[in-house]
Length: 297
Image (cartoon, rainbow, N blue to C red; front, side, top):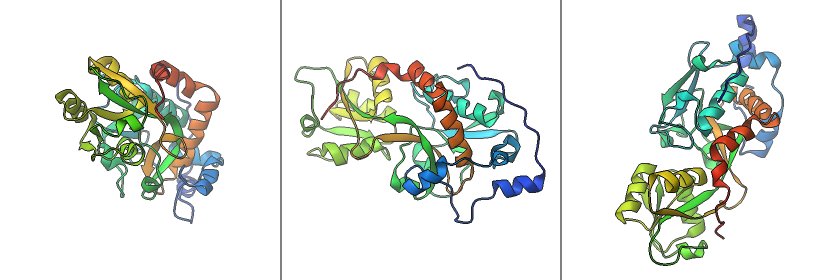
């Protein structure tokens, strides 16, 4: 992705910066999972609060610290290197950073295992981007930005003799698996409700190997990841179809330490990227191949 040049912003007096960055007295920033909080998140922050030098960062200025897991899978990242700006989430991260005033060389990446990202407590990153779905349970202990991607779940099977599942009911008798801690695993339990308990894997690589070994009949992952697995990583595999989680459409959000006032400024950056077409362009570039997948109902 081509990164526009960062704007140089004059440093504010220290006292003003401290006041502008202090959390509100109610003790929390906004989250996308709470309707009342979402209204507050959508409001504009004071201009000085979102000045680059006023942002509350975990590292000394001018570095913005972003977390994600390793390995970082395609199509979200390319070559397991979040810092190259390639892949949907790497491109989104750098676009947000640019809107906040950071050049590409002012972004630092840190490794954060998926399940650790939404655990309660202090964080070593300013925000984490790792296909993390916004859920009420997670939002009790961390904060989320507004959603940057609407996610569907998908079912991956091996091509072999016999009918490919065409509905969620068809999946009930199959042995299914997914990565631990993911909404994919929750979707298996809550929506497919298979006859036997799903197998739980530490990461996507382990789930893929289990499918190849015949330990499971199918695995569930978010749609873009599933598309890449079937197109590139597992010859002879196929996408049985996609489905939406129950309730509101599932959204991926940037994740923050609970009470981090940076959320408001990042939401403003995301709003700009949506309104000027940047976010849609990034999605078209990296995820456009996932749209023609049959829907399982």
